[in-house]
Image (cartoon, rainbow, N blue to C red):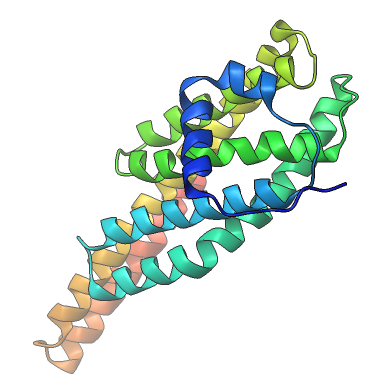
Length: 227
C-alpha cells in the first residue's frame, strides 16, 4: 500500500542534511517502496528553493529578471524539477537494469529524487563560471555510485566506471553549453549598446552601424562552427 504523502519541512531539512553529509547511511536506510508522494514533494520543494535562489540573484539584474525568477521559483521550478525527476529516473532505471539491478522503477525514482538535494547547491554554485557545473555533476555522480552500491547491490568499481564516464560526458556538454550561453549573453549586451547608440545617429549612419553589427554576428557564428 502506498504511503500518504505529507509536507513536513523539518523532515525535508533532515533529509537534505542526511543526503549531503551522510549519503552512504542515507541510501542504506532509504525505503525502496511506499509510493511516489513523498519523493515528489521533496523534489518539488528543492526545485522551488533553487528557483528562489535564482530569483535572489536576479536582484542584481533588472526588475524584469527578478519577476521572471520569482515566477519560475513558484511555478516552473517545482514543475520542471518533478518532470525532470521522472525522466531522469527512467534513464537511471535502464542503466541500473543493464548493470544487473533487480530493483524496480520506484527505487530508481527515489534515488533520483535524492539528487534533488543538490538543486539549491547547484543554484548557489551557478554564480561561479564553469566550476559550479563541474562540482555539481561530480557530486551527483558520487551520490549515484553510493546509490548503486547501497540500494542496487552493484559493485563499487563497476558503478564508478559507469557513472564516472557519464559524468565526464555531462561535464564537457555542460561546459560547452555554458560557454555558448555566455557568448550569446555578451553579444546581446553588445546589441543593446548598439541600439542605444543608434538613437543619436542619422538614418544613414544607423543603417551602416546595423550592417556592421550583423556582419560581426555572422562572423562570430562562422567562427563557432569552424571550431
